[in-house]
Image 1: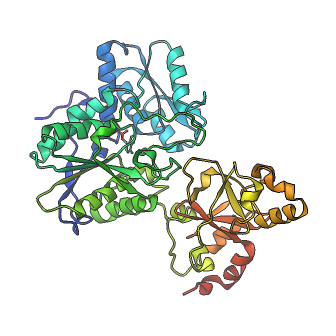
Image 2: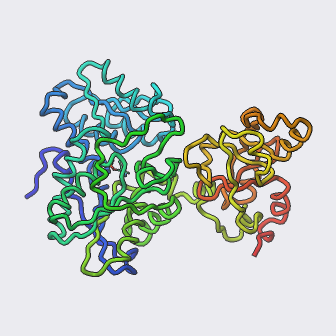
Image 3: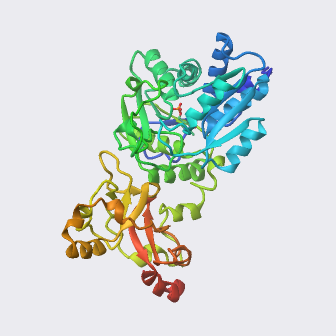
Length: 468
Ligand SMILES: Cc1ncc(COP(=O)(O)O)c(C=O)c1O
């Protein structure tokens, strides 16, 4: 008989499910720990419950108290759910790009939602975590959960996720694959599995390609909640204290397109509707399992459900707008007009001079926020303007001293962006009305430009104009 005294008793004990189809071509069996079975829908229920219980024990959170956290994601929902069940207030600070569904879910649990500006450097007073800290300091009875630096976060995984996987596999697990956000899951679960196996279990972090955890430049990526993004103006980058890098044996670095395509396959081939970070983790697990034997056993953790991402990764229109899907039967697309994939445009950092731009390839060149290491492809969110090298060459021909001037003095507004897979009609409607230009995105990155003149013939020709 299993009677639950409250919903909190239903946190954890999630199923471990074999991936039978998507992993049919790899030698080692792959099992998925499906964390959307948790009551608020994600792996974060474990960390949130662990943090609340620890705060109650230490007296940091007392009856009548208020739980405060800064997060756009699942931790907020988990804490709001727990606050409701245990009779606390809750305040969740979210960045302004948070979807209305997420805000409404938090409010449905009775949380107060405070919206602040997103994409700010860590030091900025309006950064989510700084707003949350301030609110916690001035709210009577408040306790700031702070999942990034709270040892109860990894500890919850050391005492629940890890032991569950060990017991469910009868100690046969050999490899554990998971994304790293705060690092709580990998640190606690991976740490436990290593101890239990006498150091035999290998722990593999599944990381977005540009995340700094696995050596990327920290530029933006499209999979949410994992990896380490670095704002170009962040002075001192710090990893969360919840993350112990020594637990990770190695990383598999996965691009956005591979993550997204994998999570879509997971839904269609396994019937498991999971979120984008699960796509990253499963893509990594498949790579890991491909190099193993049938005697090995890979466990991959799926953090949350795909329900929260239906209008992104599971929406063909969204994928086309950002250049993740290209083929569209019977309708000419930007890809058809461009013919061969354009040679990637190299963006110039805003710290460059006019001289740096004189030999740049392309009629219109993006100018991006500077970041160390540089990036050959540029996420559209980091483009702050554009320059026309031809115009700059004419300028310097007339006045050679102009070449030393900073490029930002000659910045033109950045045009809109269209996806390489967008239908020609839709792309035409979104061109800059003055210049008739747009960036072309491939995998969310600026890869070329397209003009009204290039699109018009295809538009006039209609579906028959599609190149074959
Ligand atoms: C969807 C999703 N995936 C992965 C993670 C990463 O887990 P952790 O913070 O334990 O590293 C999170 C954490 O917020 C998440 O919400």
